[in-house]
Amino acid sequence: MNKQVIKIESFNPYESRFPKRKLITRDTLILIKYLRTEGYDVIVTPEDATPVEILYRKGFAELFADPLNVALFGIPITVFTTIVANQIQKFIDKFGDKAKANITNVNITVDNSTNVYNCHGKSQSKKNQIQFVEKKKKLKDGFQTSFKIISPNSKYPTPIFLEHKPKIVGWCLLHVDDKGLKAEGILTDKLIKKRVAQNRLNGMSVTGIAKKTECSICSQSYTECNHIAGNFYDEIECFNTIVKTDFVEASIVKDPINKECLVNFR
Picture 1: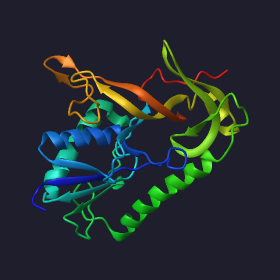
Picture 2: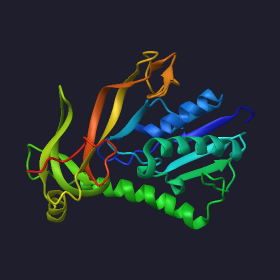
Picture 3: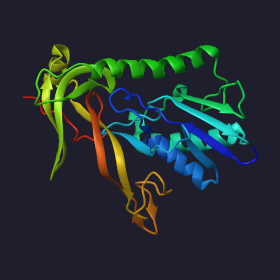
């Protein structure tokens, strides 16, 4: 294969509830945009007609929070890791100490080699490779089990998790009004309820799947263009407008990036 190709594997931890969706996180999409502007042919696998959709977590920042598989063809790993390192640094500069770069969550292979590397270009041990696969399975299995649980209150059908992990601590109704996105619900976990009441755990974050998006610069789908939200183009800031979305879950988090994403506990 002479063409410089990068294949990035989609990952849908919510397969049991939202099947047949080709999902990538916002930060993975930004990485893809950077790679495309550098002239690389980026393919999101599986290679089928399923559209690429963005998995976003509002009010939460964790780079490579989900396991990411990358395959390089005809590209030195040092070139790729340099681009990733630059993205990680921008992420840390933006979010400071709250930023979490999960380097161990990224597996990189080069030209169909059996060797696997991390974002530093260092070989991953067999143990790390096994843990990578196990983490993906554990996430899928955990959410599959959680989504089988029925809410005790039909008014609040959407589960509330703890830190976006498959541990249900309550139930809510997610809706959008003229003031923005809101989650109204109940907490069912006594320990979490106590921590929220004590103001020790009061952040809120919402996971959604952006089915249809629009770039404010070019009016194309945000997944298909190379503009990046927050960057300026001819002195005009880029915004990504989510036109259609599926809400997946809400989460109680300790450290919300958006200080206004808080739990109002009564």
